[in-house]
Length: 222
Length: 308
Ligand code: SF4
Ligand code: SF4
Image (cartoon, rainbow over all chains, first blue to last red; front, side):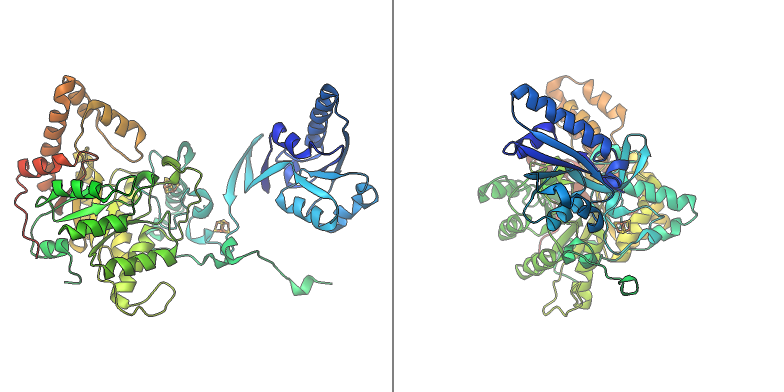
């Protein structure tokens, strides 16, 4: 799933200060699961904003609304009947959602309430961790199912570097060294001989470096 | 000989090699390099020039290497993968070779988090092993990474670093094997304090016959004080400093600690020289370059063979 962090209240205030009518738009998918931009979080942010407006004597009308997905226009269409009543849409979806909402309502200002951070997993209640950077050419078959691009701080394809210590990464004693994890896993799988193979220099053109990416599946088009 | 490198020549003659390093200044004054260089005259066979070490912005390794070259040194151009993509790296390799640099040390590079620009974007388009192979392909096959032909091959002697003390220990020799496979010709190790562990590593290296395929230069760094030793032990990633050493230094009065640090360094060098497969010593006296000559002399490493 896509994981994000909510921006600070101060930062959000700074963005919406010039406006009086705000549509606070949640998303029911990833950001709900990682507890940052679903219905519940929309409610929390709305109350924070209302409290602030009452305290400051600032006029501020907030409408809370959460749609199924902000990355599909059928769902974004559901707010068409009332979107014009608001000066600004404060989106609590990932960056893709924020942009797609803006594309559908070209005369509305759309602002991001969260910082989109990574593609990851739920480690435990309230803890998420990065796993993939969407590089476009997956090499998990060569690295024991653990991604060196996402999980090594230097994205080394032939790690570990000299900074690995006690299984932890040189950048942070709390973070596992991705290459230690790879070596351990290869060992568990009896595939440590794979470690001896040099992984060649990567084709980054399938990653973000090649420019914005698009996927077309002819057989599923209408 | 594949190159005009002084260290390649000395290694081929079967002699022991001595290298040291010179950290470029955080400014544009070439005199700093010249002053540091002067301290190493006739003491070393090659001098490493660090590349924005610990991710702190400094005069470029390339420019500093040229200053040292003008002084008659055979510089070892350090190059990290953190700051340049494959286009810039290959371009610098060509430029360095064109200006008479004979050695390159291929490194991944410290993470930028440690430096003075922790908000920087890092590159890591390739890693150190792929960099080794890039230089090798350019030099021996006359090909760029992209496959096009190199007109005028860069004749660089190819080096890399190895940290025998980083984890996981069991793949440390395998990792060196990958560097050898990629084309590395000499290795400079991380500073060695735990000689026992280094011996174990060398044993694994010899079992694989890697010491015959690349020359291993053992790295040493003298302690200036017990404070420095403690700092390195606790703050520098991948350092292995035995507690006895810290106790030994700590047991000394403050004004005697640097002397004791040099003593420890000399004892370490003696032990390292006896380890089969060690072909040279790399003395890294961090911001203490004036001690390199003293150490080399006391360790019986002088005079050095004439540069040709
Ligand atoms: S190799 Fe690429 S696609 Fe596969 S997990 Fe890593 S970043 Fe994601
Ligand atoms: S310590 Fe491990 S995870 Fe961290 S940069 Fe080095 S190889 Fe990558």
